[in-house]
Length: 130
Image (tube, rainbow, N blue to C red; front, side):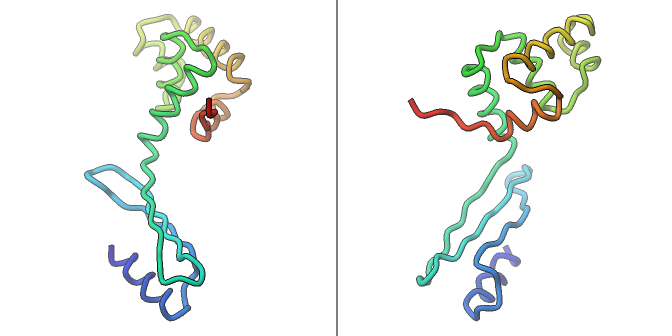
């Protein structure tokens, strides 16, 4: 809050950029606060981004848009969580080879080729308007 107040004061004197971003904690969760000064006005726009809830929402959108099975969706959630296929297989109670098969199907359905690319696909997914 102190960083935001300092930035607002500096904007008033013209010594701060028109946009800023700060990490913050909100109820124990990491969030990002974006602030933008609207040009020519004495108004500011603030937005709070919660990456964790965005990822969970995007997981559901990706699952629907790409036609994932419930098991593939669960595998995708574990990959997005940062687990490798061996640990994900243990969590799901399946063989590592089966987990790799699910991962290959995820790559095919999402048009990705690597786990990092798959996570980026989910993180940046934008639902199409209907």
